[in-house]
Amino acid sequence: QVQLVESGGGLAQAGGSLRLSCAASRFTFASYAMGWFRQAPGKEREFVASTSGPGGSTYYAPSVRGRFTISRNNAENTVYLQMNSLKPEDTAVYYCAKGKNIIPPVTTSGFGSWGQGTQVTVSS
Image 1 (cartoon, helix red, strand yellow):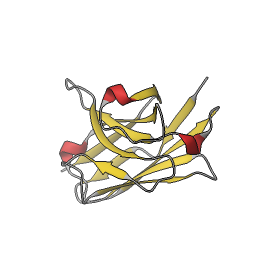
Image 2 (image 1 turned 120 degrees about the vertical axis):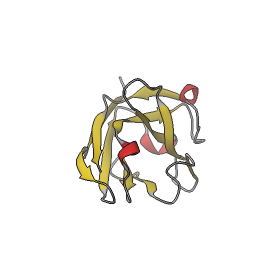
Image 3 (image 1 turned 30 degrees about the vertical axis):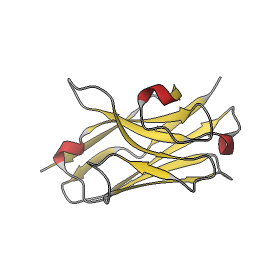
Image 4 (image 1 turned 90 degrees about the vertical axis):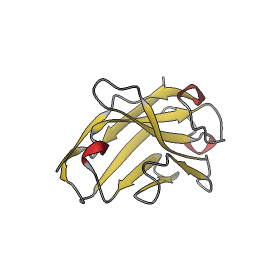
């Protein structure tokens, strides 16, 4: 059973930064793309960023490109999301997700396992 555990969420002021972590276990981490999604109250879950298995390819939603950075440490089975220049509209529950293969997807259907989520709240 795949296990994904997010951490690092919390409260930040607009313009501030947060770093999310996702510890993965029970699968060969480097063989799978990983991604981050978010879901705000009353809205659908939306793609934020993804990275290939080796970590050489990354993709971002237009709304976060240039502010967020996804990275991974395959030796530690962890994927990160560095969030800078936070805005109130970034407020959401953020989910870590495991891809179905090494290629990074950009849609929900491209991911097969999900973490429990971590709340990020950005105040103005």
